[in-house]
Image (tube, rainbow, N blue to C red; front, side, top):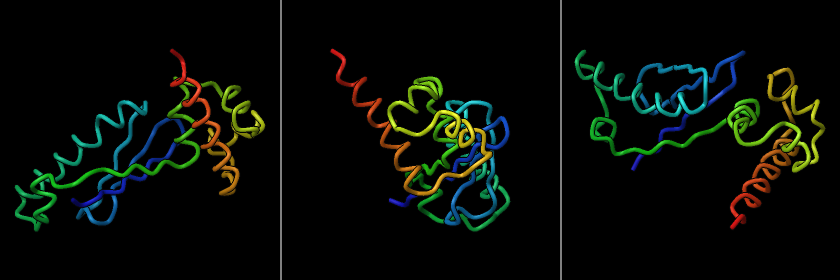
Length: 136
């Protein structure tokens, strides 16, 4: 099974996604919400594949047959924004130990965190998730 990497970014007031190089052609899409984007990704890819087939383009067999899975890679702003409906910046700040104002800068794309800072944010989100899962 082939993996298709989907790069997801927060672009001003929208989520944006691009498909990896193993998908022929350029595929870019945007959506107002993360959930909408996740719904549109497979639909957009299928539309792209159908168009390539109709145009007589060379389409890899694995792509034509749907023998693939998506691997999502979110930039830090998209990661924080995708969690907004579940956790506030204040909650993420408390869980990660990252200053709330700095998180806001990351969420708005004004600053990009170093790798270790991003790891703290991801670990904080995991901690929030573990606490929610533990609720009985």
